[in-house]
Length: 388
Ligand code: SF4
Ligand SMILES: [Zn+2]
Image (cartoon, rainbow, N blue to C red; front, side, top):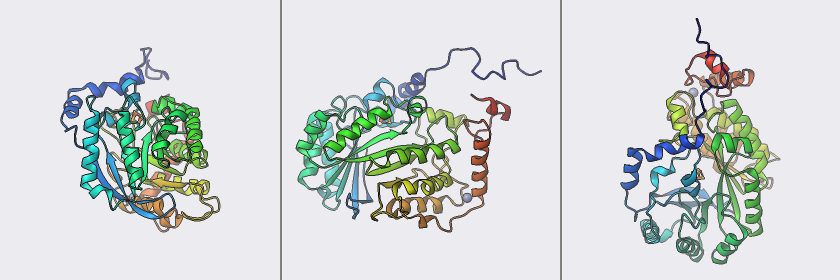
């Protein structure tokens, strides 16, 4: 006889867990606490260089400086479902520590003499006074303005007020603000990402950035938690279309699993598969028209925005992957597209696993399976079909 509760669609009558508690729990575990105390507050988390493109389209080298900070104020009160930045933060970082980290980064690359772009990432928002001392915000803005480097900083929406931007542009009149919007969809922001702001906040922030002639980079998340592959693909194309007109660059981050997050827990329970690389190729093919309406490539007159996709940890089980045999080749084509903006990068790519990916996406569009049918979701088929 079957279990009488097995066919319930909405749980078993117990109170549901709050997403807030699921997000917060791992940060207080002994391994997380030990890790936070293990690093030197005077050393940046990491500093590295990558090939990049300046705002006028010129190829350049960029230096990325990831600072160790107090972290993100949204994380203190709640936090996003996939964010593992708490692993790299510590609540006793001082203004002096940050200045020491900045100096160490400059020393490592000769005062950034050979890099034309500087990206400063703080596991939160550079322009948030509760996270970063105002004096240090001013140092970063001032240094990059005086040595003539294109500066990119990250921020949530609520910091980008007229008042704050007037202050920042009085020190550095031209920089790029990268906003982790993740999804241009209020339901996804609230129930899948736990983002703590809405699409209206992004609209307001971008209006302010436009008023101060600052560049806008928008991060979108491909396949947030509690979403199947087909929905991820369809949503991502729609979100790219929605933000393209107001974003100088759109950077799509395919989900990669960071330790101690809600998505990590889903992944360990075989309830989430990171995106297929084929989905990213298909997303680019479908979204290309929204950034190049006349089918051009980067640098052409029809360019509305630059679409960038970096599949972090591609080919690994915790990052976007295909069958294992074709991952390197497909990920390389996606990376090349980010630079060239040409769909020709995907010409001739093929592998037997493409048929499996196509079948999964087709099934997910045909069956009521919000969490997907891919093999890593190994629970009982009947339960999966009934999952709300
Ligand atoms: S806003 Fe950014 S840094 Fe803050 S919790 Fe969300 S993803 Fe993490
Ligand atoms: Zn393959």
